[in-house]
Image (cartoon, one colour):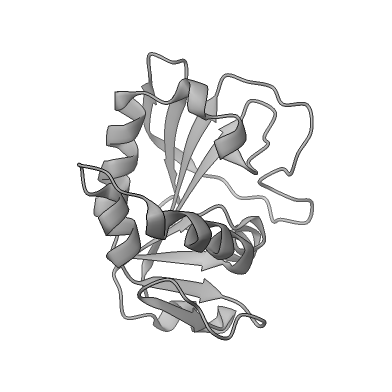
Length: 176
């Protein structure tokens, strides 16, 4: 079974949606390195349909000298969807939610995809949760975690504070 890491941008009040609208003022070289290291440590991405559609609309046109965009565009991507039938983004495969545990990869990275993240937490499949907590209160927006999730205790594995005030927190599932 793949090791599943969930990575999210969140505000202090737990809003995670549309980070491109509020996180950019806090972007630093430290954050770029953190995201770069995270992406290059992953074998594939696992996405919900809505996040996939946003990424597929944006990433194919992006370029950068560090190779981040090339990695995003070239790596395998798995999308959980019952409605997406013809994915256009390179190296994308649509799968059913019950096929996650059978994927032929070692390290899966999940970004955005709140509904998928909730399902993964309900099924006890999240091995690591990585949060970039931004020093901003948005006051409204979609929360990362919805009501109905089981109580889940995680262990703080690493923490960094970036010069912008962003906290990079890495939690892992406790050893059984």
